[in-house]
Amino acid sequence: MTDKRGSMVAHSSDDVRGTLYIVATPIGNLDDFSRRAEKILREVDYIAAEDTRHTRRLLNHFGIEAKLFSIHDHNEKDKSEYVASLLEEGKSVALVSDAGTPLISDPGYHIVSFLRARGLTVAPVPGACALISALCASGLPTDQFFFAGFVPAKSKARCDLFDSWKTQAGTVVFYESTHRIYDSIKDVLSVYGDDARLVLAREVTKTFETFLSGTAAEILAMFDADANQMRGEFVVMLSFTQESGDEKELEAKRILGILLEDLPVKQAAAMAAKLTGEKKNYLYKMALEMQNT
Image 1 (tube, one colour):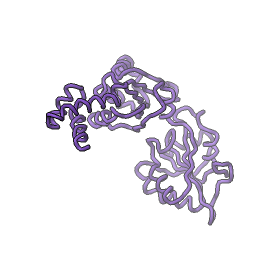
Image 2 (tube, helix red, strand yellow):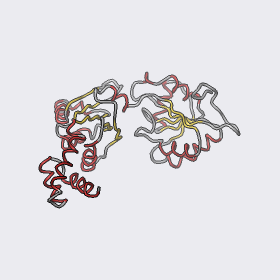
Image 3 (cartoon, one colour):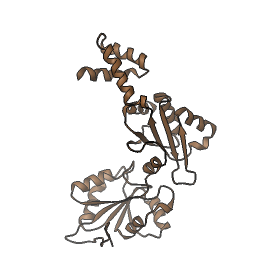
Image 4 (cartoon, one colour):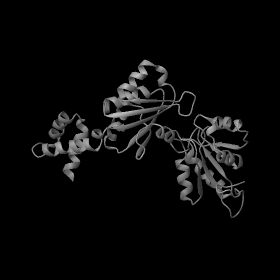
């Protein structure tokens, strides 16, 4: 068996430790499965899978026989010691998620962190990732971006999170499900109005791959016109207008600075909210920070 450099993958030995390979798998199109990923999965001693049934179908498609065990959100802390013991015996293990790159909104962080702390080897085997695939084809700025994973299920928590992005540099990216996509975009509209440009990548690399772009209101109109556009898995990308980012914060601080010369914090925040259209709680926190600096 070969390691990531092409030399033999180690089996049981008193003086040779094994490697945990983080293997990306296709997110839709099976042709995206790399030759190296296929080779690693054929050669490792064990495959740790998010869902063994799902991974078994992928392995069967490529004629790969392997010893599988499960690692998911609810057991990965408990499995960390087990994986470490396998590597210390000289066994090689591949970690896969149901689709895409493990650890990117998928299980694996606790195990990788645990193994690194033990001085054990973890090697990436790159491949498909919905985040990167969507972003590079979005037409939005890619020089800086912030990935938020899956956003909260409750509207209040979602809006609070969206509101915190108002000063975020670059494009913001998050994942959303078919069941919550409409409500999430409604919340984007309530927080940003027309100050955010959106691109939604739906079913990336799959048969019905679609990119929708526009303001939140325009995206919602597309959903209302064709409910099929709400089906599938989504990568949501937001790019803010210049005013909705740093310059809008600077203007709010300027106004607050003037008001705080003559008004208490609470009144200054309330007055600034009327002048800027920003949320009073956001401005109240800003005013407190300004007074403490």
